[in-house]
Length: 305
Image (cartoon, rainbow, N blue to C red; front, top):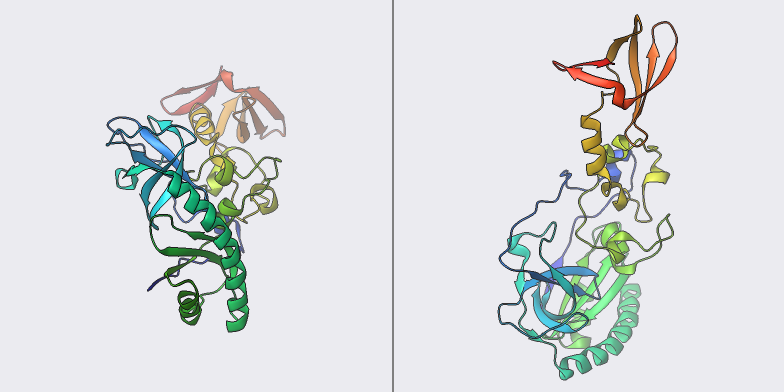
């Protein structure tokens, strides 16, 4: 009567590379879809789901609909319509089954009270079994007899006895999901170093993987305390301007190359795409700061006009 999931566990960060996401891609693939997709959000996990409205159901922004999710059939809030969603694969798209009825909304309110009770029961049972688990959230599915418990832990947890206890109490299917630090931040929410809500919580959970290269190309400090968020991973916002910096750098010389200017060989020490200025150190000890517009490339060789 239960499904046991043991997802990958994030270990303590010991170097900058450990702050990166597991995926190495630096861009989200964009697919073409026939017709617009509805963007819906699962309140309990802050996950966005994209769906087709093949049945032409009259559902509007702010209303709720019943859709299939990876956890089972459930209710989600309609956020709007997206014509070109980023990071959404065709296999991720579902179909809106029906508009949430008054009975569904009433059941959701009733389940919300039960979820608070389940939260306390879960914590009591965890202490009883002496398990190293931190409960993040609880949710009862609207259209199925199933309860979801999202938890975090630094280690793998054998929760088989716990599941048996929960099944005997709630008399329904129990599913425990161990989540990582990014998922925990997305669900719980909070304020980032910028003072705004977490991007993964308030903007979108379909953000591109973040890498150290993004910080380097934007001339940011590689101090882990400055480029990592509350979750201990690289800041999601590092990816926002990466495309612009990437394109801008293509028109500029790379740091470390040598160029002959004013009768002396210079080494490119620093390139700042934002200010369009390049710092060079000459063999004669001179340090020059030159506007990037003066650099030209002929036959893959850079020169200064």
